[in-house]
Image (cartoon, rainbow, N blue to C red; front, side, top):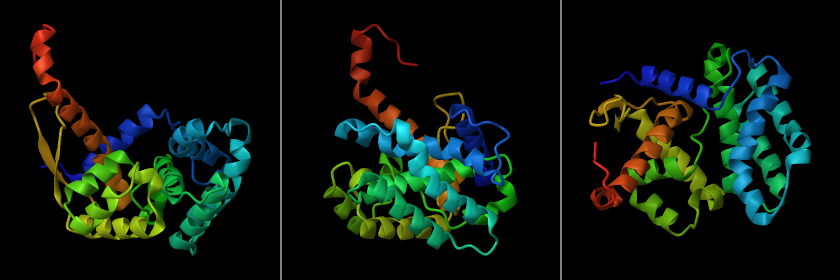
Amino acid sequence: MIDSDEMFEIERKLFIKEMKIPANLSYKKKDDYFFGIRKAFDDAFNQYARRKKQNYADIKDSLISPIIERIFQYLNDNNDNFDACYDYCIENAKRILGNNKYGIAQKFINMSFKYMICFSDSDDISEKFEDCFIPLDKYTINWIRAQENKEINKRLDTIKNAWANIDEDLYKDIQNYVKEVLSNNPQYKISYSSNAGSNEYCSLISNRLKAEFIIWHQEKINEIHRTLEKVAGDFERLGIQKM
């Protein structure tokens, strides 16, 4: 059994490396926030912008400035409330789109906090991330579906591109359900070793944002495994030996 805190640290370091997050970013320096929140913006908006043939590149910094101000205030004020910060940021994110798409807004704001928790000194304010939500996208929703909550799965079935088109009511119900599931520290199978045949387990951490680091990466791996299983019959025809 792998320790959940250890697994989170492994995944956070990997995320920092893959996203090329500089090692000296600090939650105390407002200008440093532009790096992570620009990336969060792209994570949430790029696909939508391509479909709508919109280009936010030249105005991105002006669009995210109010959100940077609010998150900076939250992380640096001992008395600030996460829910108030989150609601303010969501409303601003929805205005960027001009059509109140809650699903895209939640990914932008939740990913912003994911980048913030990767700052060099974020552990000094670890309590600020206790109430953060799990960012919803195709991979985390796959994990949520696997928990087999019939009511939530039924509602997700009615939504095309669920994470982008989810409404606020379902979003809140999912977040409350995820909090409940993680409070029991469920065992989660992970592909951890370089040996493809080796799997281990960890008890998922109760913090929703920290758990996402583990869940997101593993669900991405699971999808690759499922794809390979579907095409397994083609390996022999192509002269490829299965490992």
